[in-house]
Length: 258
Image (cartoon, rainbow, N blue to C red; front, top):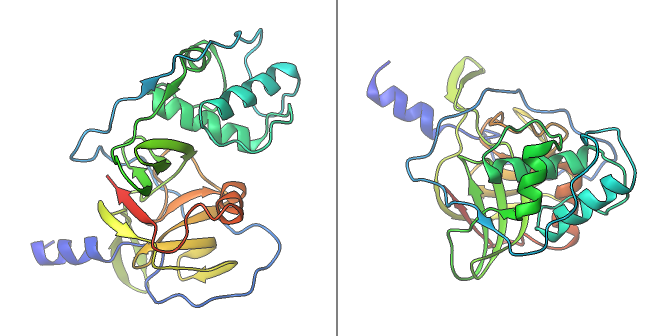
């Protein structure tokens, strides 16, 4: 492959290859984009996680995972919320939303991303492990490609942390052409949005917020703890609904990808 061709492939990355058009909101859940495999580390090291001075929560008597419920699950959810890991309303039921928050905590702590709460994950909870922002002023969305985290940041302080899945860095075929599924690093701004489904050439996107051409933060039913998208930053459908409801990523919001 020539150097020019390689550059062209990199520039073509994204969730879609044409200007989006709005579609009416429709109940349901979109189909996931094609999965990929983990990508490499970014050129700059990600900020080290911080440790909270908040009092530790008591350790669970059992390993917590999806499908379980009870007071210990409720305590887990409350602790995740306290540390800023978005996991919806604490209800004592370990569902997919709580699993997403556990993924995010495990990523911040640099431990195995299995979505369950065993001794190592409980230790991270007890120590109050949180990611650290790079920006220092203003309202910002930070997307950490190495840790696969999406952060809402205000004046250097993280208000919410989400599990995300960005570009797989694998090549894919579309209409006879080859493209690279990457999420380019840089500083951008949210330029357009669709409050509903976007039926893009590479799949359905739920309530996308576009910040770099066809690349957006959007909801998806599949948000694994590793890079798997065509270039967008996926979050859960529930998380995307919360972001819209709270106007957390309005138009012109700065997006810093590193």
